[in-house]
Amino acid sequence: MDKTKRTMMAVILGTALVGGGITAMNMLAGTAAPAGGGTPAAAQTGEQNERHPHIHSAIKALHEAMKEMKEADHDFKGHRVDAMKACEEAIKQLKMAVEVDKK
Image 1 (cartoon, rainbow, N blue to C red):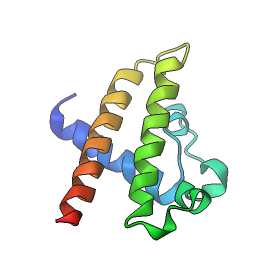
Image 2 (image 1 turned 30 degrees about the horizontal axis):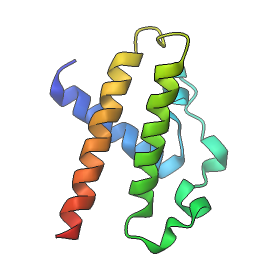
Image 3 (image 1 turned 90 degrees about the vertical axis):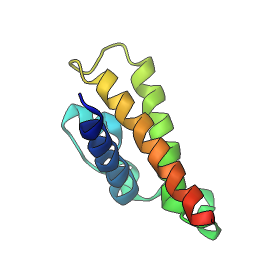
C-alpha cells in the first residue's frame, strides 16, 4: 500500500475513532458498530479541561487498537500489517496536529 493510501486510511481511522468510538477491531471485522455506546473516552477520564480531548482519546484508542492487533492470534485476513501502519500514521498525524496548535 502506498503512503497516500496509508495516510488516507489513517485519517479515516482516526476520524472514526474520534467521532464514533469505533474500534479498529470492529472496522477490520466489518462490524463498525460504536464501542462503549459511542461515549468518548475523554468524557470518562476527565480530559474535558484540556485542549482537544477527542484527539488525545483517539491517540490512546489507536495505541490500544494496535496492542489488540499485535496480540491477536490471527492476522485479520491479511489486514493486520496495513491496519497497524495506518494506526501509526494516524497517531503521528494527530500528535503533529496537537503540537502545531500549541504554537
